Length: 315
Image (cartoon, one colour):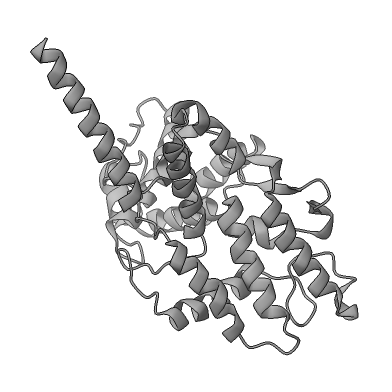
């Protein structure tokens, strides 16, 4: 049986279980064609997997490791057909991802970004207002930028002070309560937008000057202009500050406010996790980034603990 047929059978079975495997399917078929060009025969060997992984276009060790990670489930599938087929080792070429540290915005950074929105070109005055309101919403709710951009009019119940997020990552939908200040800002934007009669028929909440709904390409482009305007060009491992980093900033600031209020952090974290749309609280802890204010609190707490421990030794 050819490699292509084996891959197609494997993908068919996985998709019947509900896995889409769109990009993974393209990659695995690429491997199948490579294996046939090499006239490779079963079983799937470590050396064959390594050779194909080494052809990753970017040439990065992470891209090569991700290629092998795609082949490992396939090797398990082959093992069910023929027990002599070895299962590829985990982390054969190391980790598949690395965590690039997020950019944590200061209050001054956020104020500067929102003020700089006035510099954005607009034929109707709507674009600056749209991007400023979007940034404010991300700052106050920690929404994923894509979630905010996809909001429809019917998703925003400002009378009840809540948003309904549909097709969220890990959730079919979730409800996000809003603060009074967020409701006021969204109502002001809604009023400003609806003064332009040709925009009233759009189903999208955030709109562009042409009446079309805001999309991530337009949002990212505008944010890039704001970043350049403020010279927020510092990069963490080659990546400049992003809209998504406002979500990380929200989590860190929420944690900071709880520490300052002496709230029980461990019992509050599950609430925060659900609010921002995580299924596992461990994913929310992953968002936390060291920042001076948090490090100062940690240092003070450690100092108190250390002094208390020394007093116990004296007794």
